[in-house]
Amino acid sequence: MKIALMDSGIGLLAAAAAVRRLRPDADLVLSSDPRSMPWGPRTPDDVTRRALAVARAAADHRPDALIVACNTASVHALPTLRAELEPGLPVIGTVPAIKPAAAGGGPFAIWATPATTGSPYQRGLIHAFARSVDVTEVPCPGLADAVEHADEDAIGRAVAAAAGLTPAGVTDIVLGCTHYELVAESIRAAVESARPGDAPLVLHGSADAVAAQALRRIGEAPAPSAEPVGTLTVLLGGRPADLTEPALAYAEGQLLKAVSPAI
Image (cartoon, rainbow, N blue to C red; front, side, top):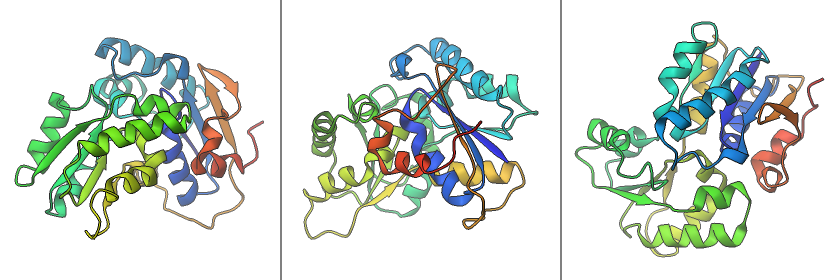
């Protein structure tokens, strides 16, 4: 079994690690083009063109499924990717976890890139799943780029700025960019420091859900103890590479490093 994941940069690490935890025996292909990121400020046509190139590089390795581990690419490019690759290659998009956050009933915030915040796509999800809940949309300028470069100072500044825009009464936060899942605990600490005594903050990412959906689409079940551990193929701009130094700064990158490289 082989599962490919695509993103502009290392935001795909969270979903890749989730697949690894569910099926350690799965061979993984990580396809990205970090020199073109961030995709958020680009036009929909430009995002689609770049996403197609990254997806085609992954598809050349004949995976059983492709996870679009990027909110921006899922918004703008998913129909085009599916039109080209399906039904031969199932394509799984990433949707912000607004529905499960709304199910809790409490006020919640959505942290997302400035381009996604207030977009018709995000507003449509709020209208569909959270009309009866108090929702605050929080733009996070610079956070994805800081995470991409594992720049701790820049991450701290961006997280602190977004935390300052997050109402003290929220019970949940939706992580509306896959990069943010790599610094989830920093986000939790920053928001909880401003609300001492409240119940623990609940964070909602998409990695676990898309990993499970990928397995369902190809008729596989989770097997957390499966052996042997699968291989890892990394593609940067379509070319074989190693995990980057910033990727290895995160626990998810270290988890993926601990496998044999594909031959």
